[in-house]
Image (cartoon, rainbow, N blue to C red):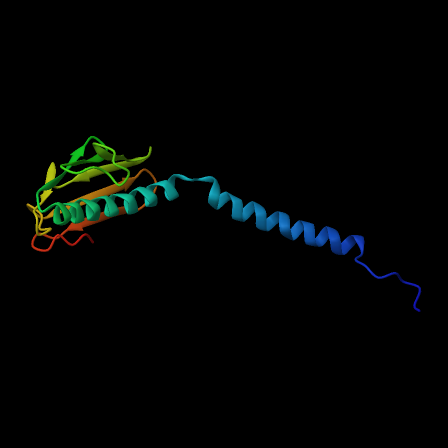
Length: 140
């Protein structure tokens, strides 16, 4: 035996805690600002909202329209996924929604009434756009 007990020295423990503290300070600061996550979430939600409207028009063999109202979207002509009428989504704080059309309708074949571009602007982040293509209704 060498006379030493197995384990970590106080210097090693303090060093590990200091490194963990630095990593936590850097990592948590990225997650403290939830505006970016909320903005991206709303962008994805709006894309799925438009795809849902198109699929409802095809399933119902009729017209389903989407209206841009204030800072959100409202579905007309079909209930939402949980049966809510009208089905609507609203942008979180710090995100502005603008569109090239005031309303957009999908026919029984899923074709939109016109092409549309939806622009999502964050206060301190990137500008994202969604495009609904005129002939196919593809949301990109």
